[in-house]
Length: 84
Image (cartoon, rainbow, N blue to C red; front, top):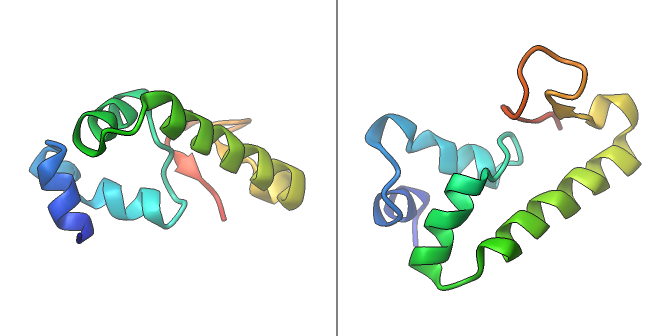
């Protein structure tokens, strides 16, 4: 399934379809709202999606030092995504 089709199927507004691509590339976090949409469509628990995001955040912070901090930790844009 394409990222575009997934975005359409989970009800992501047209102006936000690029968000799925950013999540796939690790440049945007999976929010609770997105996790709920994914749960409804893919029948995989919201907790799974949030755990995956938390695990990814931890890996970035442990392996990447300050350059790997999620955006929002010490910046003016909380929750906007992850730096690579």
